[in-house]
Length: 170
Image (cartoon, rainbow, N blue to C red; front, top):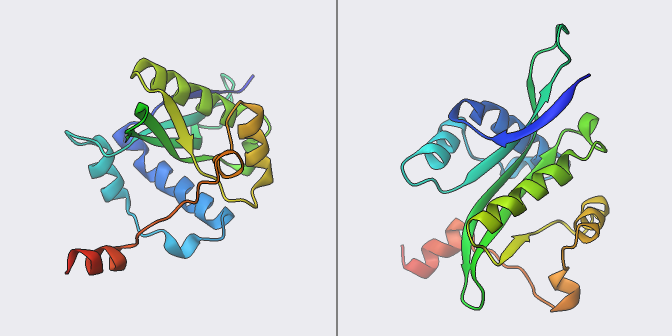
């Protein structure tokens, strides 16, 4: 019987991670915004001071089957800091290929990120989701996540490079 294991990504997984990033961006109707390369992922995630960490979901075919192992999902996270609560973990992306959804893979990735957070002394695990992705919103709520938009009225903002250059006087 085939199985899926959740493991820490290695440098050799960067091609698969980029493939899945592009699939996620396509799903979110934002494919034109993906500018990252495999080389940047490798440098930023596997250098001396990584900017991110990543888990991959790897499909393991049954013994004797001609299929090969395949990365079918990922969860990319990093550590942030709350002035009120201290250490936090932020799950930037979580994605499972459509044909592998409904098997609990996304839940297993989230559980593994929770384990990492607790092992590192984090008090909170944060993530964001597009409001139209009702399936993901439902999953996160079912797993115990609190919707800060509803509960506390938080709005999420982002400064793009052009705005940062303007602010920095460059």
